[in-house]
Image 1 (tube, rainbow, N blue to C red):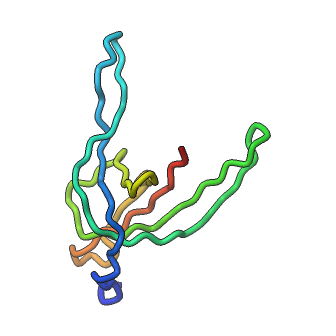
Image 2: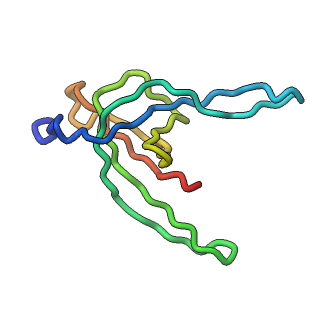
Image 3: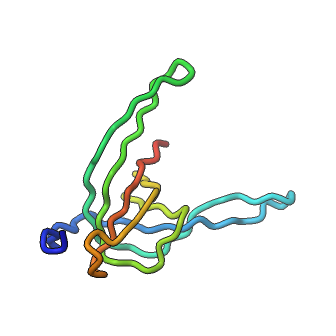
Length: 110
């Protein structure tokens, strides 16, 4: 797959964010997100799933996001494109060459 990834296809400007806990003053914490980096990536929709729950029909959309290799990815991180947010569910080196990272993401609906 390494020869099939064209760096010119990384056209989406995304912000990588990590979770950050802030004390709420009452013994608990508030979880927010802090910017780690701004990067170029490609976004490919993969699947959509609708499941009825409590009389509503929430839809889950998954995406495959490719970006240049990063060694600082960790669980709980997310990617943001404008108002759209993508929770990173899994990530891997697709061809084990150390050039790219492939993220399986779920779009977070507001």
